[in-house]
Length: 499
Image (cartoon, rainbow, N blue to C red):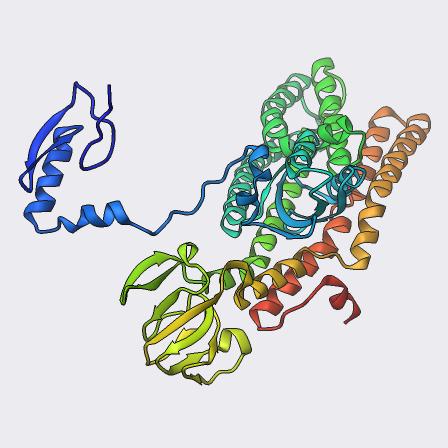
């Protein structure tokens, strides 16, 4: 039996909710009484053109993000984010799960051995992967599956999606930081009581000391496993793939201190250091949160450039302007641009004359006069006249799109010193772990277990190479972002390093 659709909303009409009404002299079916009332109100108000526009609407919604890796092998899908010359393709991917330079090293070293992968460059500051591969030897879906096996999720880079992920990650980090801060504020009061009792003339009663240790344990445990989860997870994934990352020394330090403090609490002899665990996690999370905010501010230049591109245009059809999505335009179409509007495409003026504000493109503050036969660029602002423009360039081929791509490439490029840093960090972490082990052994034989543990954990915490791995990519991203905001475009990181 054929399923009928509701005349108003288009949903299937069921036998339970089926309604009928005479609309404009014709009997129509509806899925519910609400649709009947709304439809009758629209016609009674003389707005029946709503349904004609609804059926012939040409403003297409943005394509949905499909996370099935196999879908990214389709030519139509790749056309939106892949540049192909012959069999060689290039794309920029947004990678979730990158934390440190060791992640950069792991991704690049894991992809390069794949047959068909020409090059892979990971930008730590923006979590982007610039990938070049041979379409005849390897499919993009296989590369995405390889990244997933490493614990990373890669999707085609999109400014809006990247902004959404950045906001989500920063919000999650803020919650974890606030939770750790709450735990630290409370556990510090207990620590003050313990220290004051130890330093007093009469000392602290053992029963009271044990009670405070149990309270500290109850406060530190949720902080460790909730606020510290990103570090624990990162360290575990690194060990699974036999790679050292910056989360490993952090995790070893907090787990060792926590385990020792738990043992002290259970045995009832010695001093616990739950306050050290919570305070250290809070400080590290503050650093991660500030890092995320800096990364988001650095990418705002690209977002501002994207906002210059109109999403719709007035296409001339049979002499009449029709509002359509820019994605619906084709080369050779004619677009009507009214006074004060932004030009949606690169093209050639075929009718009218006006003054165009090209300051976003050339930096020229005064409007430039344009007439029939002159070329205009997308994102520039029309002055007082009305123009009819023939579309010459669309999408990624417009001058504005090329500027955006240049800024993104510069932010994602690696300066020579950054490549050196990425190679050093894994070895640096290995040296830190070795020094921590040597420190523990030395103090264990020359002092006590307590002093040995504190000394070895101090080595892990103080020598944590987070700043070492993040300084170069963050400084590059911030510099390129500020330069773009001032109208100066930087081609790559090597140029900044030379300056």
